[in-house]
Image (cartoon, rainbow over all chains, first blue to last red; front, side, top):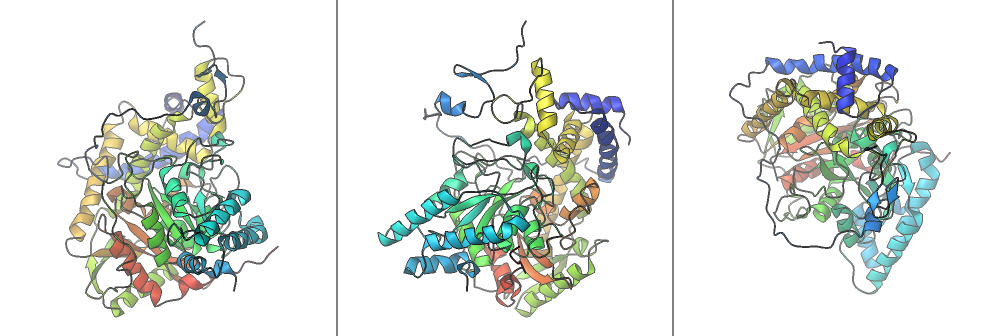
Length: 95
Length: 490
């Protein structure tokens, strides 16, 4: 199957990737080839098969809801590109 | 003899008796790093001071009669996706350049408790996506057996550092073969434990239903000892199994007499398998037969669909896991973006390499509205069939033998521009991840061009002890794991 450039741009938008036009063209060719290769799965009859989402197949374990120490703000913010007080700073989203 | 020729357990004994000190062992590693890593390029970061300080502490513990265990003082390396407090962790990505973890991941804590000095952080394909270490944002690692070739990947830096005797052992991670394939291509031992055996808390995530941490060592007893150190239940990882690991060294030398070992037709009939790899692996299976095992032909009929299944499941999970790299809390932030959406998009475009973008795009597509059922859900159903194949086979056999990789080490640059050719490297390793099984690679021969070949042993869930015992039985009768790569100081 062949992806259109519009489909590539739509998926890049969902993935929050600002691709260059060269990258868009490359992704279109390469993703189309990969999708062709994985299309062989449609030959497998899975009408009576349950999906496996996890190899272990265990149920999520429970644990007691106990208060435990967490990072102090300065440690949690230590790798942040920008901070204001005890918060992460981002470009303005409300004018 | 250089101390670095010793195995981890042999060194541990000499440290215990006082014949060698941990400081001497760390210095021997650093000396080899200085002589050879300019060519091999296994390390992203060498922590000389930290490793020497940890070695001095280990030597003090011995003098005080407080040795932490058999590996106390034995220097190791870490693939650069294990969070280490105070040291950089990049996951091989420009988006994490300069990131310094605020805490140690669980396996790092366990290593520190066991007393193993950490020599440094080892190169890898970006976010563990790749089979050659060429997708590292920093530089490719070279195979110590032939510097023109790749050590495999994604744990290629770990494999090369162990093979080149720059560390005594290392930890890697394996999502589709990233421990076993580089172990095979670099002539060392590598184990992917059962899904759930080792905690992933504090390990940079790639595909969470497949990722598993494991040891990379020079021989099987070291592999068992390092697994013992890290196979501990961790409440911080909800997939960590709440069970106590058995003693992996206890029955290691017990042999294979009476064991039934399956030879899956689909693995040995793959077109495109290198004839020297096939011959070497077939010879290894006959050697195990002579040592008392019964070889049984088995069929894993859905093997041919594993590659397609994996390349939908893993990218889908990766696209979700990698959403966290958005320039807000840590890592790179693109400058000059006027609004938040532009900042996300540019940060991720600048920070991610091409293979990571390809997989994020593929995974996002496979999860997107209108395609989820046809791709992601379909792949999860085929995954059930692949898992069922193994369940059926393990009704008649105790373990399965196969090649680890269809080819020996390939030249750097040979496959990197063709994603589908690169993905074929993993054809023998990724069914094990999809099924959640333990899988071991042990050296089983060399090509005429002196490149290593690996034998793969796949076992039932939680049956690492048997998998290791089979690998050890072969290893004990051969000397492939004792050969040293022909490195010369530049």
